[in-house]
Image (cartoon, rainbow, N blue to C red):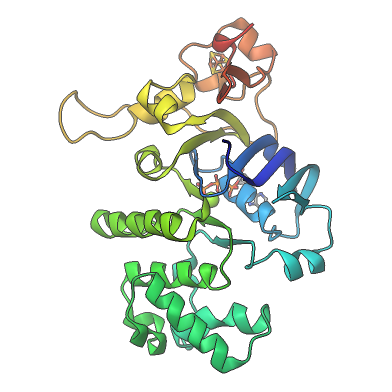
Length: 322
Ligand SMILES: Nc1ncnc2c1ncn2[C@@H]1O[C@H](COP(=O)(O)OP(=O)(O)OP(=O)(O)O)[C@@H](O)[C@H]1O
Ligand code: SF4
Ligand SMILES: [Mg+2]
């Protein structure tokens, strides 16, 4: 039996207006997320990962616009409704996000517990005492002692701060949690602890998670499915077993995989030559063509569609279809 669909995104285009013209940060992106599923969004800097996350919680900067597309949370469309309705019905209670670098933006003069309680008071309308009680419970849910409510950010390590920002996102019991590079500022041991916490939360709370990272190794550790983005577009989307177990089917994913440092064995990691595209004037045809080792004539002229290489594995490359 297929699992209930928590989120569906259809043909989403989000552009930024800049002095150089439109930056096509997210371009024709479609995917879904089931209840209790974890999806990793992986790609180099500038591939559109954070823009996609911010679109889904309606927190885009002023110069961004949703050019087209729809997104549904448990069947309800969330991009065409007013911001006020979105905040009333969806923010925090159905979908929330731990922003990239959030642990460094905690308010230094407020107790962390009061910061966790804030959404309950301002968005949930709870009285202070009740909010305090619920925030304390959530602090325990993320593996910190309840006394941490009264600490200030400077009294916490990086890993503890990250747990606090996760608690803040969870305090109103959302169904969908977006985590944007939640471990990139942490050392490897702490990173593993946070990953284990997120896995526990998925199991215990039945959360649906979008885990944004530039690190394919980390993605493979946490995600049921992997979506590889490049230049604002999906390059490959499939189960972790298919994309990594059987080997990537897109040249960009292949490059990402071979750029992971290995502990033992075969020599130095590969680096990906060239730079990600300028999204105010992306290359014609396949956006990866200037960096692709397999490029051929058609790639420079025609943009490949996302080919279905089986019902659950999509690849945007001319080598995989037609
Ligand atoms: N406020 C903004 N105004 C104009 N362009 C922006 C803005 N924010 C992001 N961009 C551009 O949009 C594109 C996608 O950026 P985004 O931050 O979504 O990528 P990302 O995959 O999250 O990158 P990173 O891994 O560095 O966090 C990039 O080309 C970026 O320069
Ligand atoms: S379409 Fe061509 S350039 Fe693009 S990834 Fe495939 S082979 Fe490389
Ligand atoms: Mg980002």
